[in-house]
Amino acid sequence: MSEVELRDGSTVDIRPLGPADKKALAAGFRRLSDLSRYRRFLSPTDHLTEPQLAYLTELDHHDHEALVAIDRASRDGLGVARYVRSQVETGEAEFAVAVADDWQRRGLGTALLRHLAARAREEGISRFTALVLAENAPVLHMLDTFGKAQRRHAEDGTIEVFLPVPDEPLLIEHERPLAGWMRAAATGQLESRLVEHPDRDS
Image (tube, rainbow, N blue to C red; front, top):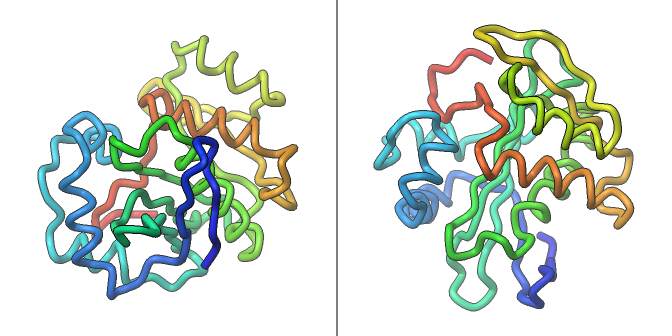
């Protein structure tokens, strides 16, 4: 478990998610706005099913990792970051981050992504991936401001972009690019095939 101070001075604990967190995860999901749920699941979703909760919490912490941020006072879950390793390119993984609406814009998402990147590096993952609409030149340009974004064409008018995971993601000099990618994901400009469903294909 790591104690992390956010940019507004508040302090949270970040630790791996596990089977005992099913109830808290379901409660945290209910705290998300409809828009936040849609951006995370790419479809209207009002609750998590038992199979989904099992998929989300019963992890191997190698090919599928998830970290949860906990309010130190209330012990409520505030956000979750996860990656799922590609079955084709084992050094790549898709990532996703969801933060409770009342804790957004405080640096929590970036903190979660930085700690997730550190775990990814420990497990041999060197690149995070996401999808961008091919016509969305502004977000592609924005990503390039953090270092030329590697990309390849995907399906349905999208481009797959790659975020190199720094060797030491927790160093302050790596915060800006990770924060930029986090903002793009939080505002729905990055899409993910990492939809929380137990039957998904990796």
